[in-house]
Length: 322
Image (tube, rainbow, N blue to C red; front, side, top):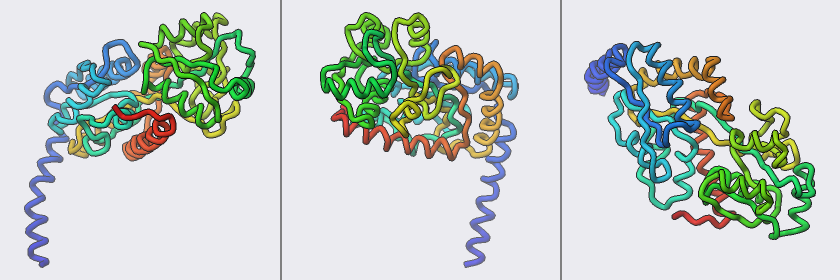
């Protein structure tokens, strides 16, 4: 038995040596970072800043490839099916985990098909209402919603979007009932909050800020567990009356499952530096987001927790997988 084990160890030694050598010479050709959404959004901004940083550090080109479509699934699947050789990576938003809740069949497994590297950033949504609503803070809004059960309305960019799920979690935890009015995007929903056609909505911070500053909408709380650095004057929903509420949009950096650990270790170290750089913080702040670097283990646990959390929210809201 000892001889068999010894022979097995000897046979695996060259493989380990090859993997180590590969990691030391990596990268020796251009590296692709897939973004499963169009250019210009938060995911794309993060990817481009990180790609520029990696290109300088590793003396090799890192380039961004935008592959939008099908709820981000086209781009995400392309990475899940890519060779795990360190030449393809993914930067995606929380749709990575949400899709497994919203769709019966998806073309990737968010747990098995990827090697999480780090959470890159988080971005809050903010609960806003029309200023004519007689509620000056979150507690007053909840009391009013309970008094007028089922009469008040809220808008979203669409069924299953981050603002929709944020509101469903809020309704469940606050014990209120609001009518859902889905729109095709954030802009038309926000327009109707401003005009008073609907009562409320959760909006991303970047879009809501100008309307809040102009007094066209009233902000009641942000979805982060504590106050957000991007909107420090607005209390968190947890702080303002719904204890434990936490529902942020996150952006993550991943590789195909099976990517050599030595490569993952190297790029994780550089990702930490990139996410803590002043340029990254400035770029993210302009998009209403903040850096949130993590360990691979913490990111993996976060993905699992998000899937379970939003599955419960969807079930409570009666949202059936499509």
